[in-house]
Length: 194
Image (cartoon, rainbow, N blue to C red; front, top):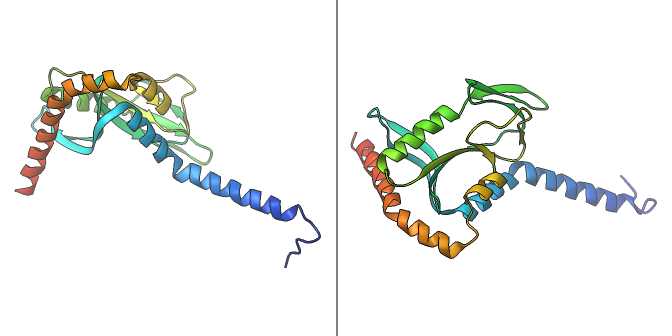
């Protein structure tokens, strides 16, 4: 059993260590989601998660996040990657080198282009953009590929400081947003009848 009376600094040091450990656990497992939600709130006026819509080849395509912004519709693919990322527009697979492992994943750009095309097929007169968003912990040391950004860059690009002007723009996009929702509902209704 430890006696803290002989070392008055031991108890405060243990408390600081416990707080530091709690902060690190929070940052690793919970802070990313909060940061993502804050970024989405800063740029978006409405959103749909796990949207399934028809694509050009009579099939369907799933979109992780579709956001209604003052600049049009934005498709997001979120990557929570820790480590150095090596990827480029022309590479088929991107590599992550983390402290404890190395792995690859398919270049997300081609599927993002397909998702953009599928949304544009439904809402022809509205600007449609797409981004692959890497959360904190990813570092591109050899350059950042097209359509790739972090949360700060996303907010800088799609955020609107004048909220009144942004709401006015968004209302012009609202009927097209409803077309997307209707296409998704029709797609889910066709699945329930199978």
